[in-house]
Image (cartoon, rainbow over all chains, first blue to last red; front, side):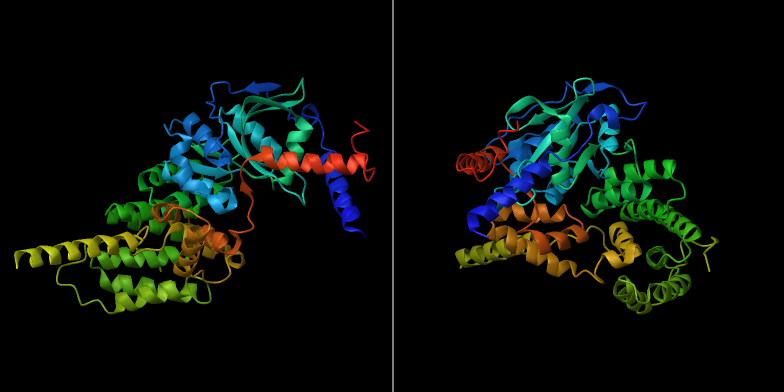
Length: 326
Length: 127
């Protein structure tokens, strides 16, 4: 095939893919969903060259009550050599400003549900073709089923109306990436327990302890059986120096999920800190057995060695008369 | 003599602050982080043990290479989980980078127009 013809074939197939059958909004909208939404109070930051990432991020952060400008966010997310910003870094920057970035599942009704809860959604669009991508971040602020449009804050357009099928196709080609910025303790409309706790764990890893603690508490209220939410609560208590609360939370993880090696290891660590060395050693041995062959094996082995090398404490165990799991 | 002592103090102070700059404070000392525990529980999805330090160094170098200001890099790395760092280390050059659409769209449009006029494609006539 001549190069020109090849390029034409790619472009033509891509152009066709762009008009692929995506139903009008009204057909896909759940019965209980509002027919139209517009979060018109959402702020607007016209983007500078290549800076749609910082502009879109500032938009959703500001809508969630964080006073931050795109110029502040640009050094946190923009990559000059890529002339743009990457998804994970937008997520990371949201954490830096104390918000919980919750990446939505890939269904359009999650977008609608977030809007119905009053939260604008940051979306990645591919405005080009699958093989000739033009990546763009915009903020979905609403839709109108009667007129079959998506409403966006996008680039330099304060209120962009895009035909729903076109929006859905560009979002689809962008990998259906979308996230909202939640206030700590806020739970998304279609929350999935694991996905939510994983998002909070990201906040914890970024060192945002207070926000993470509030979010774990909310997760425990909503899903009391979710073991990793308790692990998170234990870790936040441990970081605050509250050994009793930490030990209680780790114990709860073990009751919910008896083979969880991380909770055993962390419990052993709290016990060691509280000078309950015999019990600590018993727990770390159990953790080592449970972690064998898992990615945690090396970390737990490390903890086991450290706990094994501790000198016999002179003072009494500070967590006496409590129940510890077998 | 006094100047010499002052200089030494300065050197010590500067080296200390540089050292602390380079050090990445762990999210939490002593216990296993929730993110790490969840990644392990997911099992197969993480490729065995993530070497977090290695991934971090890798991303640090790549961000600098791609023109990110050195003073901004540590803060950016600190905002990411180990899994995300690993992902960036693998894909920083290929992952979608949302930027400015208008200029590139123009080029695509021009290409389409040329192809249209030369009769290679006819997508506009249908519209």
